[in-house]
Every structure is written in structure tokens, then in C-alpha cells.
Length: 151
Image (cartoon, rainbow, N blue to C red; front, top):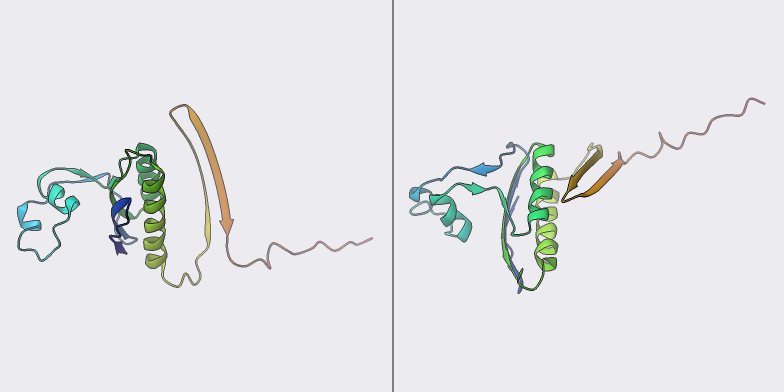
């Protein structure tokens, strides 16, 4: 899914494609990619026409790493650009980007029929460590079987 919402605090562009692979950055696309292409000339498309651009650029380094790793581990294309009120704090940027990426992921997954979800991750950044794990198949019957007492 593609989205480009704007709030009072942030302007965001997100492109998420489950069928394309992860890449850290894109090569310059050339002026023809913007002028005469019919594509809206947004800040990120203008910048991408002339320079190598990271796929994820929110201005919040930790958020950029998390989103890049999500895309890399998931093996899907994620392009995120954000310009926000980071001079105040990173809160609105992180919140608005997370909401928009979530909406794109929800749209890209469709009805989610037959989707089994599970995952785990651990890592460190700036001396802090974190680990997380989750799982949900949507079918609780297999997990709730009780053992019979033979005695």
C-alpha cells in the first residue's frame, strides 16, 4: 500500500510492497523519473531523482533502524520518508509513522485468511538490549487440549 498523510506535526510518505524485496537504499532515478512521468513531485521523489536515498528516512535514528530491520527480516519493500516537528521531540514523528506503516501493512495483507503469525527478535542499540516474541495462529483449539487423567 501507498500512503502520504499530512498532519499538523508531520508529512509522511510510505510505500510497502510484500512482493518486492528489501533494499537499504535506492540509486538515483534521474530527472525523467519526476518530470514528465505523471508522478507527483514530492520531496522524496525530487531527492531520489538526483541522489542515492535510504529507503527509510524519518529523522529518528532508532525508528529508522527498527523499520529497516522489519523490512529486511520480513523480506518486503518498505520505503518511508517523514518530515516532522522533531525540533520539539520525536513523539509525533514516531507515532504518525507507526500508524501509517501499520495501515499500509494492514492493506497489503488483505483479508489475512490462513495467515499464521509468529516471530521473535532480539538486539542491541546504543548499549541497550531488547528481545521480543509473539505468536498467534488464530486457532486456539490446538493449544487448549487437556491431558486425560488415567488414574
